[in-house]
Image (cartoon, rainbow, N blue to C red; front, side, top):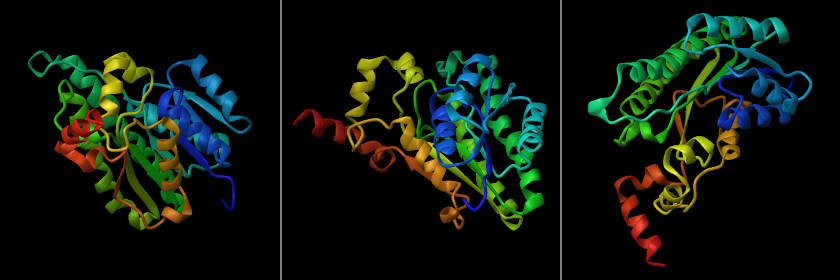
Length: 258
């Protein structure tokens, strides 16, 4: 980078967000860590080193996004990149799906992406340069048991990103989406258990799940000058899972026959 730029990573106190914050800090970005747990946020800030900042708040609220964007500018003098990563996964059967779960996922994922992207873009437009990356999932394109809210809101985020890309292009801002396949982490292991995750790996053409660093690398590239002509796109980091589609069953059959 010709000069040190500032990136906000929402939901960066653990998991994918933490990996993104650390990778960007190593690459020379000033990083603003966001979350709701002060102890975790401070730990990630310490890992990121000098220049990192921390902001706490519920990303589902419009005022949080607006305050977070102002905070980044006040603390670092600029806002160049916004990674909309904060999220929650909660699975319930469709017929018993609670309105509370539905609304919470809509608020965090979809409203959070909208308000955060809007607040960030308003700052970026002043300098006519910016990068916005939304984090989605390949589950947005498939029917998965229990994902009535999660898949729906992530599909909404992808649609939002396309509209943002078209409207913000004239302001020098690119907007893209990273859609990971399953990433082995504590959250996923808690949802499914290690045995089911190992079986899931056998349905993926590359025969393994992603690690957080691989997803963070994709995000870092989308923030770079080299990705300046890339906007309105979905970058899938999934080991070939979405390419196989319904034929993941055949991938599994062949893997077990070896």
